[in-house]
Image (cartoon, rainbow, N blue to C red; front, side, top):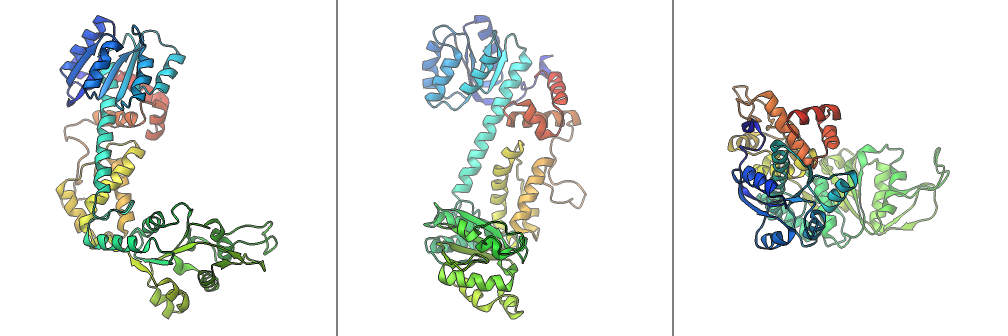
Length: 452
């Protein structure tokens, strides 16, 4: 029955559609089907009649027959894309073969309908297009909101007074060639700040080379940083350039620098002072033009007092120091960060965005965030997958935000999620199956049951 067709009750009133087909019966069928669902439905029997319509109006979607008098639908689709039309186009044809389908996709069609098709098929196709359009608009708004926040540094998200001060300091020191020490708890965004310094520096055209000093064994750290020559130690079967060499003309980011062995610290100090490296086992020195940014989540003064970190290296690094504040000290940045991560993660996961209600926002502000921004990002990713913000049970033991209406059946929830993933995969059922972790056969069976 028609009342069960997907899309009938969807809020499509803000969308406009142009239908182009030279068959009067098809035009009448589509106009009747869409007029009660969409805000604007215009029809044309040829490309010649459609051109002035699309020049005067902003259509969200064009439903276009391929076999048209004077100009084929595929040829006009090429013309539309060349003229800058960015909306979705659904192509229709009664004479489809593989080559035609490939031509349609290459021309930029969002979907391909084979006549005769059912009402359910065309409405579900249009629904997927409108869902993509909605997500694109939401992502645009998120990116615009993020790009205009007070911090005003690409990648650094925050509008709190603490983050504004951090960003002002980063902007001031970025153009200089000086070594920088970034301090702060784990997960506060020290690598994000390092990358921002690199992008704003005169070395932005060069490489940014990150190194996790804690992840490299003490036996190999000098070879990794400075390189080695063949035979320098057991297993060194050929010459190898180090990371300082690869970072020439750019920035070397030494994360967790407090984990460097004392011997490597001494060599690093010499490199910072002389801008020359000596590969392990070599007598030859190599000049390197590299800016060093170091980061630590430890108090280096305490490490110096415990004789685990060289005092002279500490003073060499500490000339320009920036401390990243913990998230618990800037709760006003949490909503902006949540929207930023939703904008990043939702498209890559193939999932719809989540709304942030005031109660959830208040609970996030009250939480201590021991893992800082990294923990918040992980929570957003987990919440997108679950469909609601998973920040622990409320006193009543209920989740903060239900994924759907309480009267929605499990089958309806499954269908809504599968359709969202399928839309995010541009209708590619194999890709959607992979993202969902189900077989293509299962996907085909469910789509067939839903009239897709």
